Length: 334
Ligand SMILES: [Zn+2]
Image 1 (tube, rainbow, N blue to C red):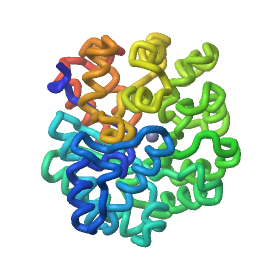
Image 2 (cartoon, rainbow, N blue to C red; image 1 turned 120 degrees about the vertical axis):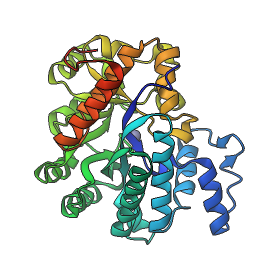
Image 3 (cartoon, rainbow, N blue to C red; image 1 turned 45 degrees about the vertical axis):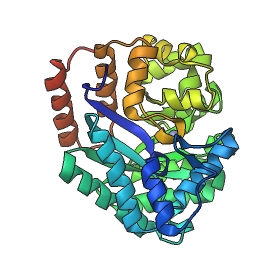
């Protein structure tokens, strides 16, 4: 059992974390029929395109700053209830614009939710602004400019999500330069849908400290060595990878091999209820399906906090909380 272990995650998409019960309540509030995408077991989709339709339908039920505050607070409360001390939430201000709410109100709602959750549970959280790759370089650059301009203390990172097969990473380099110059931490989705070359491109062009997924780096031994040498952290989301068939099963998932090769890895939930998972389940999978010991799992939690886009005072506080719990002096690699 891993329930008692302290947890942290640095890769979860806000709209992708919407608890089904909250979605049901939102659908009622706005008079929307969600029977085709939501049943008593949760969200319903069959393949990747149906997943995107379902995701958009759920996202469309959050329309006001208050809706976003409620969504953020309920997800963080759920995390805190399973001993999570830190979370980074990936948000798209573009989405706020597209639904007519506006990026500022969207972000303000998320911040309100973070403050409310921290007040109620003590959980610490930060926001990663993401550009959506499939909307093209202009939109991704605009997202980076927005994040840089926001000067919001809770916005600490920049990411690029969306369709990995769209364009070359180089087309998006400027967005990452803008974010880097603004002092934001950098991470990028790669090595999930596309293979090792997408991870190599990300390292060459973006030079991020972290990569979202990156699990297909395993296809290239030299690349695995390079990741280990650089200390790049892979935000691994095993349940998501199996749901989207990146690997056929947990036995063939690359997490263990990557870790054994010295790559820094941590556990994350991605879009949890859409993949019938949760951060708690990801920890449980790491333990029971992948055979990691509690010490190895605590080591991955430590990696998540070490790689977190937070100020050093917060990082030190989170690490000492973890060390107090694990009896670790923090010096030996787990
Ligand atoms: Zn993701």
